[in-house]
Length: 276
View 1 (cartoon, rainbow, N blue to C red):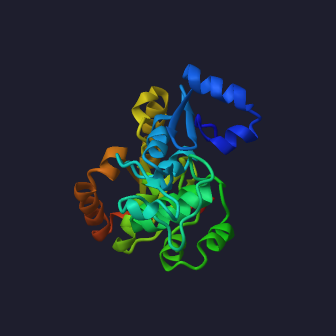
View 2: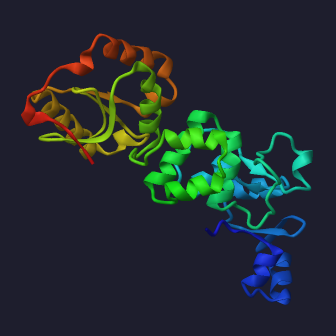
View 3: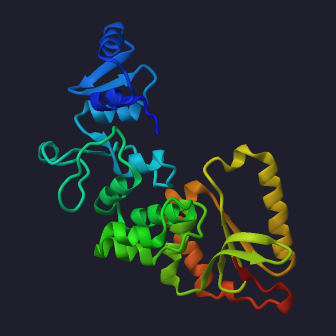
């Protein structure tokens, strides 16, 4: 990952001669952020902020740059090394001794080791599910990384890598308390693959943040909802905002539907679903 922020050692490894380095600094092509760290003019702003503050980008902020789905936050997740972390109690920390600063953005394993201590149980489970779904690490690799950490092991038991978005994972985890059978990514004849099948007949689809920016997808999904109703299913479509910011309203409504058995409407054998 090229963020435009480098340590002096990285610039040397890239083959930048001392004379060219000094010229780049003098000309403003490289900006000194702190001792031993420099940024190009087009460097990623969040990485510049982290390094300028005295640390490196880690935890949720680094995971997002690695393509992992993380809950939205305005916080910049920064961590220090063994020497600097003590002076910054609000920075992210891992269990055990802090890792050395190798790059301006932590690699995936190091970011995860900080996330397990920093994020909420749900937030960390969402991260692990995303890592598995994208094939960034295997379940066994995650277990080895966390070394039996109880918090990490609890999160991993909630994940199987099938959810294609963090909001899917959030809905599935939150509805577990309702006691219904939940099948992620169920394949339904004449309908196709759905995000979540609750019980026998309730379909929950979770739209992404930019969903309405794609008119064709919007139209296709409405047609698919119609197909689902025609064969006896009850499709429910949730928006990103409803899951992330309005669950206090949405959650109880879904729980009420489940408690009265709406998800148990029997279907003919022709319309049985299958897992993928």
